[in-house]
Image 1: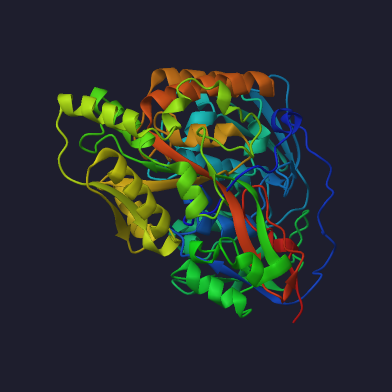
Image 2: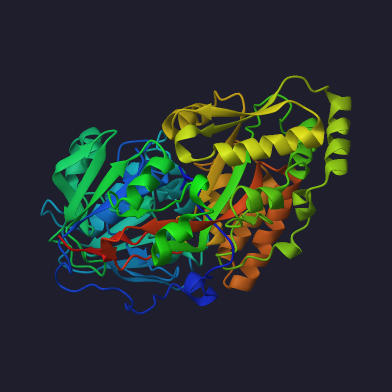
Amino acid sequence: MRITRIAAAAGGIAVAAALVLSGCSSDNGGNNNGGGSASTGVVNVAWGEPENPLIPANTNEVNGGQVLNNMFAGLVYYKADGSWDYDAAESIESDDYINWTIKLKADQTFSDGTPVTADSFVKAWQWAASNPDLLNQWWFIDAIAFEGGTYDGGEDTLALDVVDDTTFTVKLAQPRADFPVALGYTVFFPLPESFFDDPDAFGDAPVGNGPYKLSEDGWVHGESLNLVPNESYTGPRKAQNGGLNFIVYATQDAAYADLLSDNVDVIDTVPTSALETYKDDLGDRAVEQGSAVFQSFTMNYNLEHFGNDDEGKLRRAAISHAINRAEITDVIFQGTRQPAEDFTSPVIAGFDPEGIEGSDVMEYDVDKAKELWAQADTINPWSGTFQLAYNADGGHQEWVDATVNSIKNALGIDAVGLPYPDFAGLRTEVNDRTIKAAFRTGWQFDFPSQANILGALYVTGAGSNDADYSNANFDKLFREGLAAPTQEEQSELFNEAQGQLFEDLPAIPLWYGSVTAGYSSLVDNVEYGWDSWPILYNVTKSE
């Protein structure tokens, strides 16, 4: 998912290869999932306004995703360590990694009392596949085979079949050994029948099948969104508090100030201004741990001087060599970020950047940067100012200023940050392809597999491919990696595919994230997961 805040970094957990690829779940331990809430207090959560209405197949950023993950139960869910277990599903099985049979647990309902059936998933997926304007349509038409072998854009275009009320089958377009691990991602959530009557109204007041449901106060745009426990949910993530109050903050500094005074209970990012002091401020309520977050910036190929040609490749490589990642992560982030070495994350299984050809383009090398820039000038002389756009509501100014100053000093060109007031405004121009600058991009993994980020951001036509990158060799290697039956074989193919990315640089990797967060003195049992999100259903708070 697109991240609205800077979160992320070094070291941390890794997902076991057997869990990623086998299609078998872990046991159900590690969760406080008793029959009722362990506490009754409402947990206040620092939040930002989502980019879009809350429809699972049209949400690919963390503000919307965090709410949907607490309102819905997918087929599987992810534990704090990145392992997965069944939520709505009872089993997910395949003999060939192409044809899958999915069985649901019986007697599940949505919060409006209507049943969760196999058709709730199949109809939701078919609807998403038939709507090309959705941000996440790609996940369905890329992964799942088409009925009759050809995409027709209709409501039943995917090779999905309902066997009975609790069983459906899926035929994939190609073998994918880690398919089950992807099924906890937001886009694969089910939808009630009420959605299809009025999708627009649903996006403002969604009805889910997960641990929480909207309160009577609901969503007050620009201010807050309130959830209460969903009494009809019988899965493993039972709410242990009296509800969640997501509060919109214009800046991370404002959220942090409220945390210090216990006016907000949980934040997922400490502002850069407080990184030097937050551990002293919060004591044992300060959090720093590895997470699956990747930070970069992107130049769409329609940006002058940065096209998919010889000049563009030379300038992209020069820019990468001009960035002193080590100094920026040390000075701006107080060592809480790790300079990027590849396009994935050290938290995710398969991470091995040393074997990737071309990764030396990440090295800070002023002489090399100047040499490459000069070569590009012989093709088409540079003019103007290099701009790096960012959303001003996300705490990015400090690192953006440091990055453009590094580029400016190394290359001897004008380089500046370009602030947008909010995340939605920035993403609108990115999505419309009207932005005329480089722009910050980041990725919080949706599921614990390298396939998530490599597929979503760089495969031809992918829904989050902001650069409009297309390379047949990358696509081929990526798809071969998807079909690999072992972690070792998958990693080898994915690293070969990353070699192509280092040659083309559709994005400039910056650093890996870590959770630098904290919580108030009023809450207990606060844990942050592999993906940097707080596990809110387990948080307890007295009245």
